[in-house]
Image 1: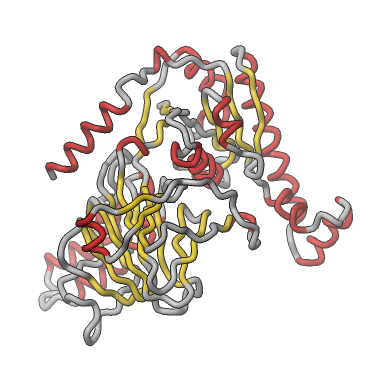
Image 2 (image 1 turned 45 degrees about the vertical axis):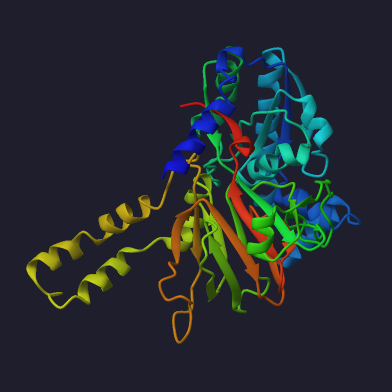
Length: 409
């Protein structure tokens, strides 16, 4: 707990110089969503618009809905651009393929327009490690289609009706900063090399751009503890989570974990490991760990006094009990802790080892060693690195890696 308080103090110190009133908004970089229609165009560049639409119809796709949603997004995107221009901002548009460290260094604010996927993509490129810069560029997201997208990372949905109001408040400094913790991933090994990453959004084997982070020698204690010589920090920070597991979901993932640099090696066979931030606790973390009203009802019925009046009363409130439990899974976006979750851990025979190994817990650091066959380490469901037998990684939070975002009520 002491270390968590110290990290929170570091967060506050790191961003003390940033205040809404001294934020100068002159240049906005609008990051555009890749719509379903644009995605299909990328997949079939040889087809004319009419040919593409016919191909989609032959497949059974609702082409009219795809085109309608594409238009909804583009219309809203133009409204956001105009809102920034109307308050005297210079605006540049960038797609996921043109979002480089050079164009980001130009901007005073990065503005993803779309859903949470577009926000996560922008946050990944706004990493100081990726940009190889100490520049702190804040992010504010607009949900382009709140009827079809929850957009938890975006501004509240009423700003989708009136983006100009949000931009006006940002321009005048009438907002709050929100600091979101992110996961730093450090690969450990004998030579400091890292495998090439793959962009999962493109659904192809196209490799991500490789940003060079220099390999470093491990200190003596770390080298001895983790049987490695070198370390290399990945240039991508995870805003939601880091997932490690077999590429084929039906295959068991065999992993070893060391929590908070303890002397215990926890061995598990499972469906993968999810290490989440407070921001990510509303997403995959909750999906993995949530319970339903049926789970509550089944548990209560299994009690020896399951038919008693008191238990029957609890069963009538099973939905409320489940909701309270699920709400308790969430933690603050600026929380310096990580929460790991083991998916579907095998709990028979010698597994897990030791038997006291918890399927979920809060930690400061997670060291992971792979004994998998065809596994990946995936950052925010977007950027994938091979992580097969013998691969080692250290997951942790650093205050200077936190994402600076603009919050409006």
